[in-house]
Length: 92
Image: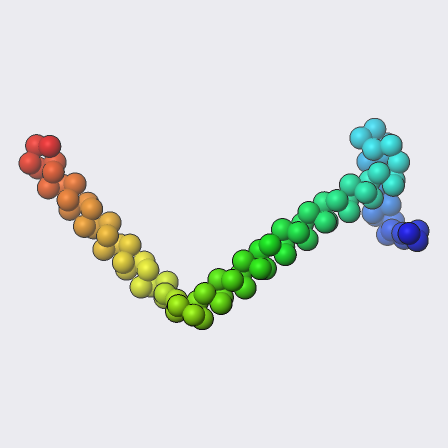
């Protein structure tokens, strides 16, 4: 692999990481950074695939408007609250 050029800020950060003793050298810092980037990219790929699946499902089955979902949830909460109040009044 070719040598990597870092900005002065990143080079200083890497050297500080080594100076604190957490890493033995700048190569270890770079490997740790690349592992984190690899993990982040993997998560991004999983998320992107999930969005694609959801989009396809919405195209096939349709989707709900946020206002409709909120109205339905509000109605359900009112119904449950009324039922609980009726039970309370009945002494239950």
